[in-house]
Length: 65
Image 1 (spheres, rainbow, N blue to C red):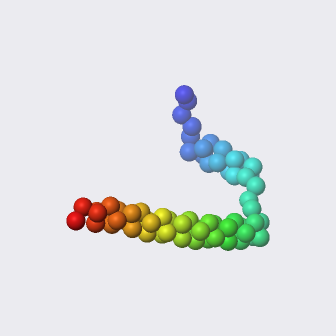
Image 2: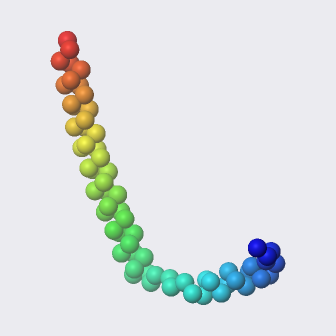
Image 3: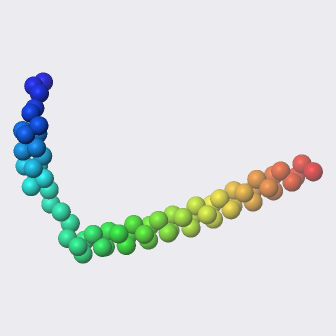
């Protein structure tokens, strides 16, 4: 594999960056809102799942007394 000079590397990076299609401001906003909603849903689900498992463990551990 041949070494690439820093200037050639820079030219290649610029050429690749021109190929990127960047999202619009609206698309970015919609994506951010979707992420916040999913994070909230998952946090709520995991909270209740954790509470249920903790209750089950307490139930099992208290049976031995």
